[in-house]
Image (tube, rainbow, N blue to C red; front, side, top):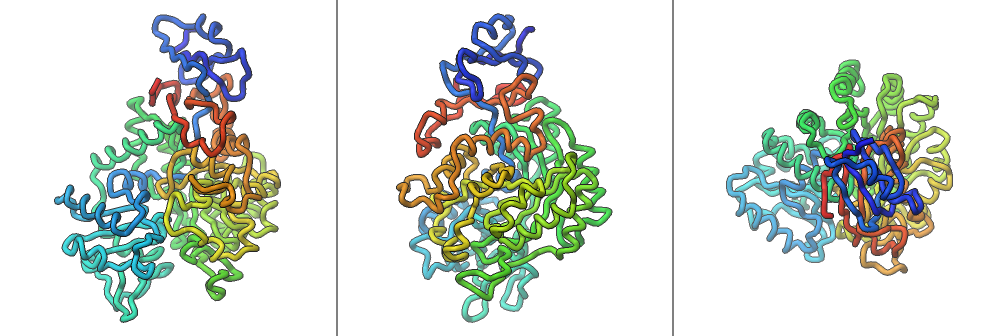
Length: 539
């Protein structure tokens, strides 16, 4: 059997020596054996890569990221690594000076805890001091708040008399004037005025997104809604044979008007147009609540630091349950953003009511950061997948100002089930990993490390956050590969190095199972193969 690609002298995950090579033809793994076995099947046109003992594994699968946001992040001002307000303002000013014709200045991923932030509060006047005449909007690291300057508020008509939108807040100064700090749906008061990217700009930004994923060994990503505008561009790359990452995408269903017959038809039409091995509309997504950090996650019993605050439940219970059931009946996978315990409980109720037949569409709870204790076992009993982002655990190395926020919001007792990876696995739940990129780093190796150690990079072992919820490296690895394939509905084709499986492969510079987990981010992805094509190569 002549091979298209032979990878030899590898340390292959899931296979013991002397097996150390794979043969690939027509985008699939067609041979696994010794290097000599595989070399016998090579012909003059076979591409050969000798790994010299490097680690060969199934490509990483990120089950929750955002293509449009990532495209914005890579083509605007990235602020995640900024550590002071002074540095933030300098970066914004420098970017604006380098792009004098850009009508709106946009930045992403600022943090809350800059040590030189006056009184811990953002104010438009800070940005005004460097850019008084051009509109600026900076979105926070959790994408549930933004910071606008006075020019942006002037253009969009935000004044002291502007009412807070439903499910949003315009933070105001003591005198009632808007400070420029916007929460939840108030952000759209500004962002709705920003001109969209042109098609060439979108395609360039998409290329940056795909290249970033390939360099990290990611062969499949699932994009979590509001990204449908990129489907035609992805399809063009697919048709040309140049798409380096498989993409599954969700379409968002808003509470108002809900999953109407028209909205259902739109989702099914997207599925009909985009439904192949490389690009697919997988299903529909719902937002039930916000995030705990901004007191918008749904906490029916109140927050520890604000007992009267309950957060936000964005859907009517009956309407949401009916929408989930309708989506399932039409073969659409279901994702629900649910972070607070009240939202998670409702998502599990809907999964239970939707039924649990073997052929049912996938139902997932996205984030699932703080379930009720009694709901831990319901993930397994309702066949609901917990889609979680371990990089967000103990996130001081991702965002500033997050130290101690969880403890403050939920209290010591409830925090014991924060990001409950161990509890969910012990209850036989299906656990799959993603990142929510660009909210945090896309690097799966950082996610593996956090799932195992539960502490920021550089922090001592004594600073592990709720270490009782840590899991082992093999368990975390499965949640980024084989179990992620289940969450994506591709377990029969992806997530393993096995005969007949799609040739979606990552090669790491070393074996992660033979090293200190603290050093996992030091590994390099040396080779990425998607659908049998080399899409990243450092060998």
